[in-house]
Image (cartoon, rainbow over all chains, first blue to last red):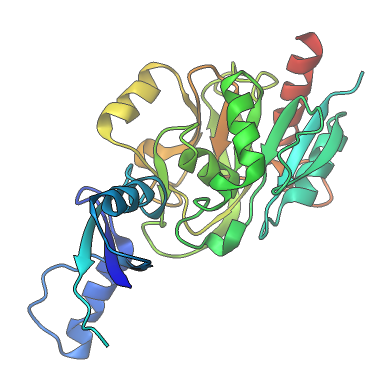
Length: 85
Length: 225
């Protein structure tokens, strides 16, 4: 099994009120010096069989059509090296 | 012949019963549609109701958009069938790309529930002909993710083509760009808005009966078609 990770983030120009709320809470908790926080989503897909270009193309397709709304979000797809058991 | 207006129930829909009742009060024949059934049962128009379809998982409306009933609705909407998306239904229409843009979390992060004043900016859509252009109406609003966003080019296009159908008055309740409460597609048959006209159809339970015009508009249009 191989793991493919899809990270989804709001586009830079889209307001992220959740990230802002997190950022504003930080000084109260004693964490200074964090100028900005953006909150996103991470999907871990456990893929059966080897991850070749065809599989990655399919994952890109599912990320673009379903996991991310590309009107407001950007996404990245990467293969995560997993230690063999 | 009565006009048959379908209302879809997704897992997590809340306002399907109110929408069915609104259709009935407006003089139409309400028809319940089920998310797993591709068949639209010969309805003349469809309402996608408010609620939290699929628990709002992933994104509001993102999973509902891929339900079997939506494949038929998308096809029919493109062929001209009137479709109204209210609140979660508006989110489903944006996720389906039947309407441009997206709905994001309210800028103040609070779920909001209030009677909201709106201005009808376009009374030529399938769902707004019973209003006067510029008419001000009050209907309930209740959402946590109702901030309408789109890129500037799309917003300019919507304004230029008169496709902003409703605008918030008094206060912008959720950070929507340009105070946009509802929009339509280029053909005017698909309309989506965050506020809830189906909750403003009876004096006993609504702040007004201003919402009834949505349903009477669609019925008149279909009878005359």
